[in-house]
Length: 602
Image (cartoon, rainbow, N blue to C red):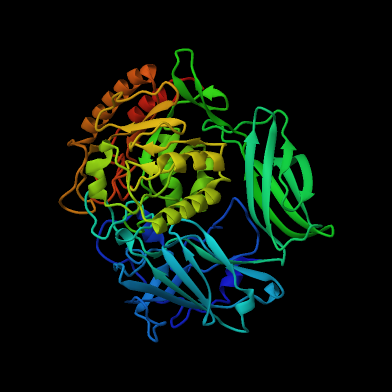
């Protein structure tokens, strides 16, 4: 079924599909902002780790209204908003703050294709920040809390003939609440950025059978040449069977079957191992069988790779990839955009930052207190980049924490806040576990909202023993997890050492260079150090690399440079915020970085 034909069936409530839209505000923008078509926004399939052929994208112009908390659906809306860009962003066409005392309402209508009759229709949201109520044809069908993970509803029982009315209500207190929110604050300054409220990832619908596959997760065991596969299903019977076929470039390696809900194991002889130098992915075909007939079928993929730690001959604990020492080296990646904030303007833009990271000679990205759309992780899987995944911080005064974190004082949270942290962290891990590029979980950063560290870290390790756990990057330090992580700005130093865990430099650098015409604001821009031109920045960067190389022999097993791009008031990126200027000599940086990345051998 062709997506463009399905799109012709849609009617946008209260306005034409060709209504006028333009970015709001006059701040800098990326080149991709100029290519956005409001009738074809982020059209790529949003979940390539589990793909079906039939789906419809609901991105585009919706109606919106900002109302005081507690009101009914407005009779008249304020105007149009371009979904899926946050209401505070330029690309939304609105660029208005929300705040804890207001709610954001969305409305549109759509039709269901005639050949989807007798199908179960799922409504998917990639991510909405933070509390979301969803209404279909004036019936409230569900609520979701959490700003970083996908969620869906079966809307089949609430559909009628003709146009379907979809209304979404969002409440997001940003930094005035207890929820995880990363670097969003109500009053952005310094290292704290503009709030992101409402829908910020793709909204879409897809038809499935009454029984269907809801998740696929794989865990590789390269030491025993096997791949464990867990397939989640909905509405199945004890007699229903799951069939999984593993392929290497269309060549069938093996096929296994099992009762729905059972873990399956596939033997993978002579496995092709995944690494940043050779990011090989096996194809998976997963079929749900009902009395021998396919009730549902999805395409997925898997990788054979292992992350671990081991002492070397000098007694230094090293990170390992596929049982070989591997120095993880990459940038702190905030994942922010001057035009879309949390949301990259296009998929090409989403790929760009990852590709430049590879071009710069890095083998890793630390995704800093943010979670990305599913396509970002698939790009990392395909392009070959290790990912350290942070839990977005929250429920903390950033200024209080920044002054206190070296004192070893943990945050005291309310029961509601603690329970919400655990819920959202588990949902983030559930969402991201299938992606082989993710090598390290990072529950806390610099004591921002850090609490019950030992308990949280031990649970994280128990929940996913296939990955390493970095307890608190630069934060309050406890003897738990796989990694000791300290921060040192601007130049690298060996501040601490742990003989039983990998010792890593979780942040350093922050070399600043403001570029006129490419800054978010005209004043109050800063970096940890300030230089005047590309040569000075490149020379300082290479000086830091030379210092880092000496520290590797003394015990450093990974390092994270701050940072990929400028972000709002920070001008310490390798690239400007609008991605239009690379602020270093790329070839010199690449050569220097490859020496670090390859320092422990391949």
